[in-house]
Image (tube, rainbow, N blue to C red; front, side, top):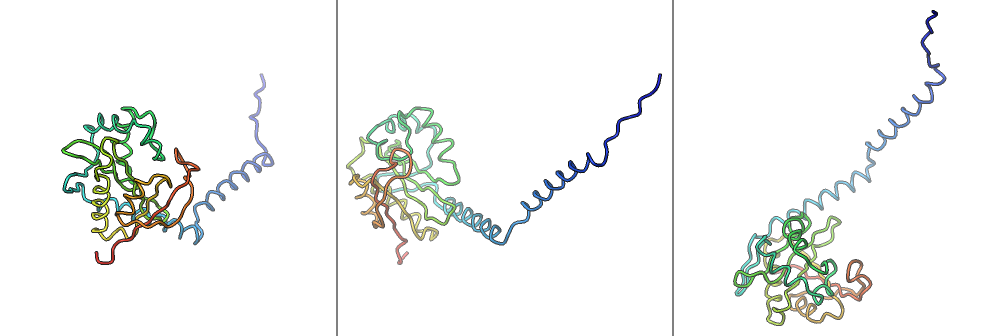
Length: 230
């Protein structure tokens, strides 16, 4: 019985595969070599990320006022968080509050959202009980941090929100790491605009909401700068 000679692959058939592999390797090398502009953008992004993380971490863990204590949200806040946040009147003026607001949403807020590097959320407490949230969102594109907040409806009209906002702004400015802070409110939300303007925010422009519940709705955008005397 004759043995069959092993099949061989001619050089002409190997050449295309070798050329393809070489082209892939060349593209990979080109991706690894950054242009000066790309390197500068990467450095700028990294610097902004570090700056926002520094701003977040330098804030105090607890802030006390005459009537309130601001502190990190905890699992014990979940029942009151659900009770107060599951409110269409609050949902209607916030861009990213789920509705209906469930226990799962509250747990996710405490254990995930409030722990994010681009968020610094404080629970607003009155006599040890959770009544709302105030805090900052941070950006990596050089934009100033954005102040956001909400208060449970049973506590409206008592000055608690103004007290909490002022306390957080004072704490932020005291670090000297917050030269500017921005915020926004629905054009028709007179109560929220009053809170912001009372805290020193100035209107800088009008526009519309870009996402969530507020998408397309008229908005007022505001800014406050660190006082020169601080």
